[in-house]
Amino acid sequence: MNVIIANEARDMLAQLDIDVIKSVNGVHSADEIVEMFRNFFFARMILDITAIENYNDITNIQKISIGLDADKIILVLPNSELFSSSSYLSKIISMGIYNFTTNLEGVKYCLEHPNTYKDVAHIQQLNDLSSTINDKVIQGSQIIGIKNVTDHAGSTTLIYMLKKELEQTYGMSVVAIEIDRHDFAYFHDKNMVSINSEDFMTEIVKYKEASIILVDLNDSDNEGACGDVLYLIEPSSIKLNKLMRRNRHIFEELKGKKIILNQSLLTKNDVMDFEYEGRTKVFYNIPPLNDRVQNEVLKDFLVKVGLLRDEEKKEEGGKIFGLFRR
Image 1: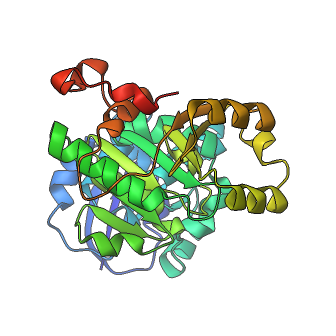
Image 2: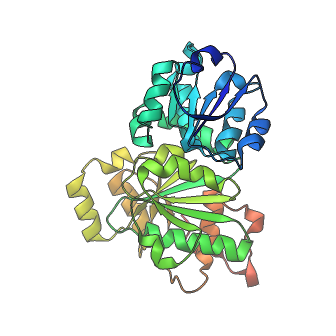
């Protein structure tokens, strides 16, 4: 059974030949709509956006996408340039609403063939996602993507260690999301989840209360959804030779991005040589770490990345945590 919430599109939606368990007309606040249907079972909600009070404010659409099951919503939009623009639709998609239309035929199609993210991904403007998700949906969470550049550069283990450090030492709420892999299962942590690329936008809004979200990007193209991205390179000769053979322009592509040397045995002078030969800049040099114990080097790394303020870093016994800092 379906639900219809209508205002300006009332006459058009009245032509639908579907089973309707509840129909609501007029203008209602986003909070009222969520409260009305939070515990109400329905198959699909056909929601005329003009029925949402102050619908021009995207945060009111966001409230509904968070409060209700976004997968079940078919959003009926005004036929105007603003609401049909890629910029606006990108924001809707980033909230997990993949079914939207301006006409009756579109509503019928979405009822019979509901879209997944894959169906609307071509509309998505990834450059807008960092602002949309961080500022609008996640409401203050920092989203940090981590991506291996060389094979097996250690993104999975580094994320686990960063998460553990932030939670155990600083009491922060941290969620880790892994895309298109299932390596997180071995850590037995309920806040380390594995998902498919097409589910990323829907999944990330579930963790709006987390202080920090760490994303293991793997081979996905979701960098634009992260507030910051760290690119990991294991600087052993064999890994670097394989990398250069695969893509000789890799360091040109990484220019201006945050390159992290991970599992690195390079000295300060070695790093300087690396930067000179690659015509690049290293953001940080992390040595091999024992994931069974606390590692002091992570504290300084977290400060430099911006996940901790300098005053939060605990300098026990005058020890210099910047030993490996570049």
